[in-house]
Amino acid sequence: MGRDTIIERKTFPVGELIFKEGSRGRTAYIIQEGRVEIIKSHDDDTETMLGEIGKGGIFGEMSLIDDRPRMASARAAEPTTVIVITEQMFLHKLDNADPFIRGLMNIMAETIRSMGNTTAN
Image (cartoon, rainbow, N blue to C red; front, side):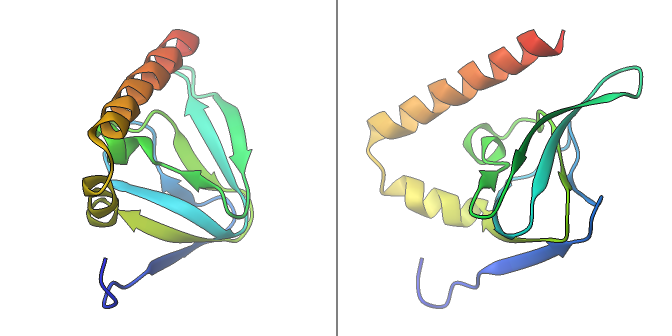
């Protein structure tokens, strides 16, 4: 990334969805301020909180690795500011990575998704 790369930040109020389960999006996020809940929805309109991520944490990264629908929703648990990691930024970094690391990331992504599908049923 050159010096002219603009870092995009977004702010979300309490309760606002950052992304929805099942949606597609080629972005990840780093929390600059605030806290985010990761939530799994169920067919009976209930939801399970899978975890919380605080300042400095990253979420949504799976969509950058394998371009598949999001496994869960992300919602601001308090006023939250995030730094947006775009696909272009990610791919630039990945281009410089060892092919072994790129392959390992794909295997890890598939394993995580498989585990998510098993626990969802």
